[in-house]
Amino acid sequence: MAGKATACPKNWIQRDGTQIGFANELIAAKVPKEDIILGFHAPYKREFTDFTIG
Image (tube, rainbow, N blue to C red; front, side, top):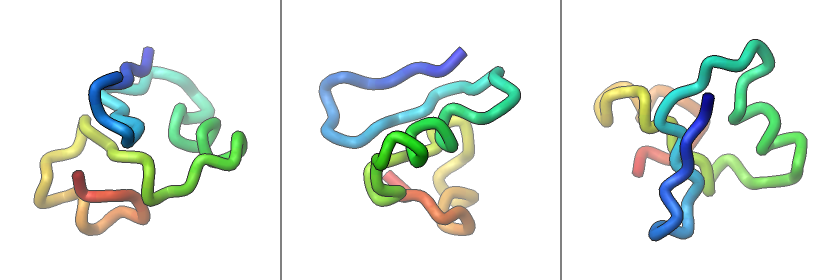
């Protein structure tokens, strides 16, 4: 299951239990990586991903 915070223009993924990965589905739908935040990672870990730190 994935969650998205609607008050923010970025796509926050709070948790992802899908096999394919919700972030991968967003990328396939042409959402830029700069607009995706992996909220299930601690902020210090997000800087090592290809996505926005948030």
